Length: 201
Image 1 (cartoon, rainbow, N blue to C red):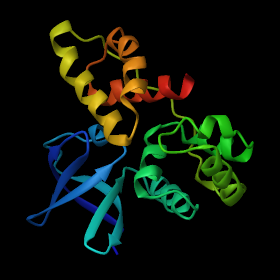
Image 2 (image 1 turned 90 degrees about the vertical axis):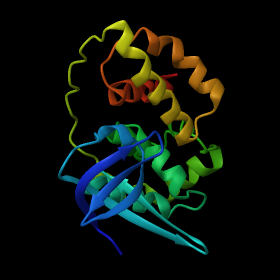
Image 3 (image 1 turned 90 degrees about the horizontal axis):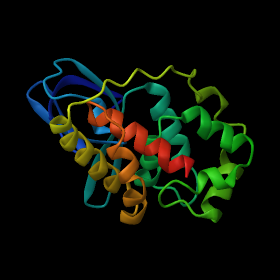
């Protein structure tokens, strides 16, 4: 079983990244692939390997505690790797842990693929078991305004990434207008703002 990979990022898409390690390219699915950039020579990605009958998939995380939170989510009945990854896409992991601790079912059902019954199961299985994985609150980096011609590609990539995570087209369309007025220079910034809006509304 792999713990992490260290290598060069050679490809980034809304669905996954490719990290080359010792001449081998590993395809790794991440909640937010755009936190990595093509050309990064020494990226470190923590990985979880999921093996089914005819398929082996690597799921990746930028931090060790994200991987641990992912593994605990997998222990919940009704939560598979893709659902767990979609839950972790929102960078507010403190909010996730607080929702579990406070039985906030409404917050949990905002994640794609999580209905009321699954949300209740998350609380039942994980309450009191994820406190140690809540990261310290991070101060968001300031967003640099983008020139109009630079805004479309990162925005389009962010919208594609949301759909890859399992958000329905109508949910994505609902926040697209707000995102167009949110000027940023990177896909990562657009995706972070989109996830914030989805959880807010």
